[in-house]
Amino acid sequence: MIQRIALLIVFCLTSNYFFSQEKFSCSVLDVATKKPVVYATVALKNIHRGTHADVNGNFEIPIRYKKTGSIIISSIGYRTQEVKLATFTQHKTNVIYLSASNSSLSEVVIKTSKKKKRRLLSTQIVKKAIENILENYPLEPYSYIGYYKDYQQPIGDAYQKTIKSTEPIKYLNVHEAIVETFDDGFDSDKLKSKQNQSLLYNYRTNNDFVQDSTLTVPYDNKSKKYSESVFITPLGGNELTILNLTNAIRNYDKMSFSFANILQKDFLQNHTFKLRKITFSDDVPLYEISFISINKKTGYDYTASGTIYISKQDFAIYKFNYNLYYRFTKNPQYTVTIEYKAKKDKMYLNYITFNNFFEANNGTYFKLDKAVLNPKENGFIINFNRKIDISSLTPFRRNFKVYYKGQKLKILNVSPFDTNNRAVTVSIDQKSIEIINVKKERKNANYANYFTFEINDIKDINGFKINERASLKMNQYREFFVQEIFENKNIPLQKTFIDKSLPLSQSLVTPLQLENDYWMSTPLKSKKN
Image: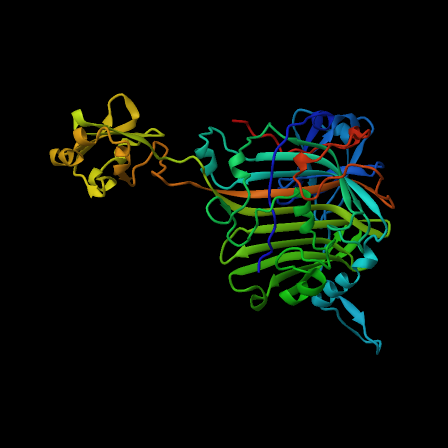
């Protein structure tokens, strides 16, 4: 059964230095394919702080680091590169190219008790990685400060047409925050422990992008907002809680998402694995293992696939990507990507992203606005909420039906109203006028309720049919990118922590004196409409 995840987004308006720093705009591309290096890690040299490229390979760096700073750009499967900020230009996108690291499917062996060597199977590698989680990840308290954002991305141009925008809409409902998360260690309950809390240092609704509250309503999976293969309950709650739920590595002994489920119990049973090659994270060799779900375990309506990267040296999980598909759809219903990075002898969160597909019915649609009986003209003036495509009025006897007390009236003609391109005149025959009997009924308070109008197939000037709610297809992103890690750091006393059950916009902001050290890598601006 697909996991139930609570989603609720609300808004607030704040703004300060976090969002106003001047920055270089940059893009990380694969030198061979010229495609984005998604979520590449960008670290300021010698400062142990940084940012990440987004899903399009874009990131930003404050200009104030230009004179003395260099950045180190790394990503699993690529050679790490150092770039001096002094070479960057402010008023253009600075492109950085990464080349792939050497990789191979070298022999993978383990020793048996009889001192013989045999090939290490991919399932054995994954099993050892899960068994070694408490060895490879911190058990002592620590914290990390990072950049949180959630946003929506329209699929196709239906949303652009709906809001009548002249420009494509790349992003909407963008919200951003700076958050510090305190973790009591991997042997504690991430969600329930009172020692696992977060402080909100800033939060805002980014009004450089379109804001549309009709797309942030809770999921009902019926008429308003739904995802075909994921049942997401409208329970409300904190966006970070939703994101933390999907961290299957941190919650290795808890339910995370289908069909990773409880990682230490279900992941191996629900999937088959294949060792693809040895790749690298900096100089660390990693097993790159792909997997696919077993139909008997997950059901034939769903297919899950992904890749897990495991250290050849100590079996630490560096990266875990999971995609769930519904039947034969090309695009995943949701995708989770989790990456950890080594610091000294332990692994710490580098970033986590959760992207789910949803559909929402547009609240504004082409419909009848009002109808007025005009006895002198033997008919009705019917008004609509949008301009009408006149060519769609015919055949009028099929497209227009009018009933009086359940009795169908005979329509003679339907024609555009002379002075109003949102209205038509519907003419009826004399016998129908007599059935209505205006003189007798005109003083009856319920008279208007006796009429029923059935209108089909006519269109507005944008091609939307009458009473047809446009289905808007969207991707919803929630992402957290760690900018700095603090080892052996205990949770502070007497602080106002984020309420895990309430949206971030309702949390109190804790002042941060080091605000200059953390910044936003906002998606490249789309034109606001």
